[in-house]
Image 1 (cartoon, rainbow, N blue to C red):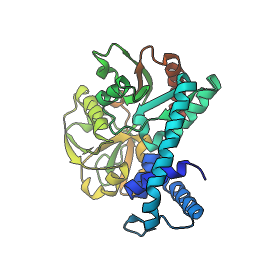
Image 2: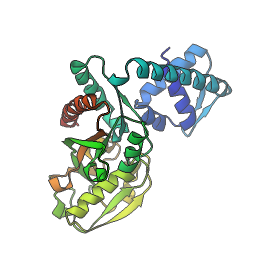
Image 3: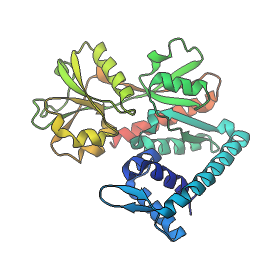
Length: 312
């Protein structure tokens, strides 16, 4: 048994939703389901009851939960102590927008590239609830992470002389509209075509910080707009709710939305070809704190992100 299966079990027991648990764990739903099945086979009893509408812990699952938490907590504590005592300078903890599951393959590629430079180096994603730059800066100040990936973060570092910002790449964007929208047939979109539009503004914790960046770019380009708030936990929520789109516009990163687009053929993704509306992907870190490792990781992340976006 992989000890990670116990952590996956505790996350699913908390979420009681395979999609949300898989997103938190940076796994596909099929992989999570396979691991839970393997855990149930090991213990010889079902741990969850599943139907089309809900997931529930069985009595055996409830009984195992405290043990699983204890085992995972002890393992995590021992691993953390080992890393801090013996490999601390070679472990780089990354927080920020990198927590999005769609970017996880990019991190794995970056880690592989980093190993070519330093075979002892390890990257670890720190899943934080907020991608707001101020919150991530607090994480760095409180040693909750060594660095953070953020969109267009350089302006947010004003007054933080102890932090540095390394631009890694530009982020390819897409505009999502219904197929019956006047813009749907456009091969690409520039800022002038968005004047006066109403944008769907996803308001879940993973999206509010993103809209803050997109809204700032629209403001700087002098584009007038209004917003339609829409609560969501993932891009899939917005895509499934195409009936609320009407003539509204949804602006997002191309790599994040394209997998979800297959869920609704009534929507179209149009490339956004305007550098005024293109955010940067930045790495921020504390000056003097694992700086060499952070800079090596930055070059590897930039190359991995370039490869990633070429295929997404």
